[in-house]
Amino acid sequence: MTLSTRRKFWSTKPKLFCGLALLVYLMSAACTAIQDKPESIYEDDRPNILWLVLEDASPTLAPYGDTTIDTPNINRLAEDGVTYTNVYSPSGVCSPSRASLALGMYPSAIGANHMRTSSHTDITGLPVYEAVPPPQAKMLSQYLRGHGYYTTNNYKTDYQFKTPKNAWDESGVFAHWRNRPQGKPFFSVVNFTTTHESGLFEPYGFRKIESRHYFSDDAERIAKLPTHPLDKTSEANTAIHLPKDTDFPIPSYLPDTPLVRRDMWKMYNNLAEADQQIGAVLAQLKEDGLLEKTVIFLYSDHGGPLPRQKRLIYDSGLKVPLIIRFPNAENSGDMDDQMVNFVDFAPATLSLAGLRTPDHMHGKDFILNDKDARKYIYAAADRFDGFTDTIRAVKEKRYKYIRNYRPEQEYYLPVTYREKIPTMQELLRLRDEGNLSSEQAQWFRESKEVDELYDTLADPHELNNLAQIPEYEEVLSRLKKEMDRWLNSIGDDPNRSELAMINTLWDGEISQPETAAPEVAIIDGMISLSSETHGASISYKIIQNNYEPAAWALYSEPFKATAGETLQIQAHRIGYHESKIKLHPIP
Image (cartoon, rainbow, N blue to C red; front, top):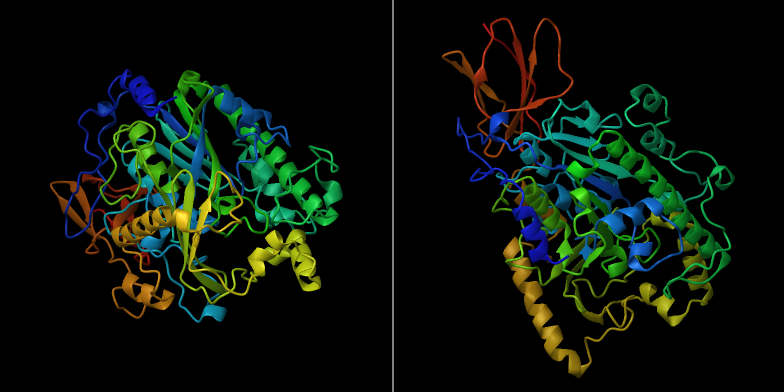
């Protein structure tokens, strides 16, 4: 389905939020509040939106031509939906990518690109910090919640910043659209961690917490699941979805050894298990009669889990599957080859809900708006755990340009977490023995070219650098200029140290700023909430007769005060410390 066709399809539906502004800024003191319009103005046919999120998965699926493993539920989504073939994360690792998905902004523009901002301070000597987007930025879920959607996240966050308390109606292993008020549309994110890199470690077993997908919203059963990261069972206790002697398509940058084949089996086997979990969630949607009222996204948070995939800026670390099923299987079976980056997901989702894209977002609505199709995708790689590099990339459909800001440094970073993978251990053993092929040894070269240029159609593994070949000079020059333009446009200075970046995020302060405490004003029986911190959102609860609601409400506009109630309130600008929680009795 072409963009224009899809746009025409949606334009035939009753107009959603005709003329409704995305935000109404209520300036009381200096706090910007998200306007929550009365439910009556919304059209009844606003779609539900469901994000199904795999971890660490390249497009190793039948809809993309890889038939190694049968994934019937994903295949059915593709048959009934649209398969996007040029979709990329802005980073080869999860936390920066999730920041991009949550905010519609490039991680390297907001201090979110170092993995992680809150860890390995004993090695880096850096303070714990958070990404700091501009003050007008809110999470996608906040925008949707502020406009009448019930928002749930099950269950991973990991955004490089602390989630505001009002970001979700529910977030955790019990979160489910089934808990929403009757008739309210929902935006639900369901995360499947079965395919995570750690699923390749030894000892090996599926994460028990993943069983929550099979029994839906049964909180009692979910609460009994073990909470440790991995089941402590062995490979022998793992469900087998394909033979271990399968002829796996091992990429040329990995050696073809029994140990590598075992990890390939784990990767595909985990994908098959995740497919069953996806099927369980989709069955719940059908049981509720909501399948044809819901737009379903299926994607992965970045590329594959294997060495020279995750954390790298090659397509093996960036390229992901994306399948979108529209209500009533409109345009089913279509393939869409437009360029899509994660920064585009928030604008597209807002558009489906009838909302415009805020000016600060970097992304484009790739579903309903064909006025300005994306020509390039961009990506960045910086620190991973205790090891820092600085790399930027720009890619069009055929060619990719990579710029190395630390060419004197070897490409391979000895990340301890990655070295738990048997295939990584195999690569290091063969390297030390001098038994790697030239393609496998590239990753371990002692220095890098400043410029790398690849024909990703002819050379999908990006092993043949074309940057020094005269006939590609025009392509190289064009992509270098485009990279400079992009870096300048988002304020990304790759030569700046992480410490200098932190100082900029904190406006020169020596510690992370704290959001100013919320203030309460009661005028003519109406409560107004504000904070002196520009960009702070305010979360509140109304406690009545000693009953405290589980969820924090998102403050949008003045509301009626009732004597005898107690307000519990907190202000929070993303990237700042939360304010202290205040209790305010209503006289």
